[in-house]
Length: 410
Image (cartoon, rainbow, N blue to C red; front, side):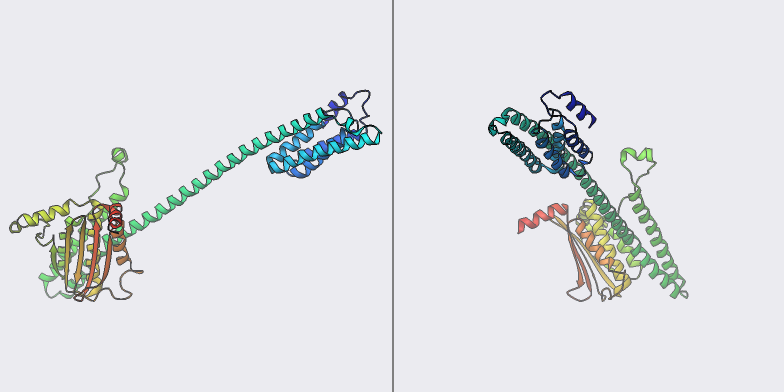
């Protein structure tokens, strides 16, 4: 404000109207209004728009009061946009012309001679320059705000993805631990009950205790394998992190061991498909010929996710047969067909009773999730000849290939 007053006084000419008091009042009000221009840009623009048409036509010294209008226009363009700023430019020019014409008419001269066309053009050019600069700054602010919004959205997306991955990982760990522990603990429970009821038959009680020992050992081995997978590090960092080798995950090639453990619990276990020629150790017997060896070799060559999913499905189906169905006989069939592996478990029991098993049906749901994780499908329900059947088809190519095959068939 002081600078505006000083420059106006220095620009005063002999023929100019005295600056005091009217000129000072106009400069004072217009300049003080700029202090709140960012909070009230339109109100300040109105004050600054009125000031020049009042100041110049009244004959006050030419000075930098136009700077007040330029600053107000610049702020309005930044805060309010093009329409408000251009509207102010039009109002300023119209007011300037109206006051000039009215003053010329009052003096008795030609009103048109009072209008300074060059001055109007110069004023308009300066005002438009202020508007253009303000719009440029507004555009930069808008781009910066858009970039900040995109960055915030990207951060939210990353956080949501991390949260989703954490939930999926927790569910995977829970499913893995359930599959590892439920089957073996069920076998241990059955064998412990058998040992208690056979105290008068030492040989059979001893056999049950041996089965408990074997099941406990297998439980610890699989649990170590699961924990090893959870702790595993990149091969490049293994030495630095002190990580040892991770125990291999089970697969369908080892399902014969699972069948033998179940048979030790008292179930009659029959094998079908590619398992029909396998010995108790999981290898093809000498009299099985190349067919049995070839079948097991085919199961050995399965993709790791498919082999693990198939193994866990068989494991959970056997657990349900031992714990809930009251079955005496179970038939496990594993068959490799072109592009997929078929897993089928039939028992002669009644199937899981309503309300039995884990709360929420985690066993059956877990088997469906296992199959879906490799792009396969799984069904469970009454078998065609009675009993209960679990059936799953696991594609060898994973979810993508299975989807392509279905689209091709469609």
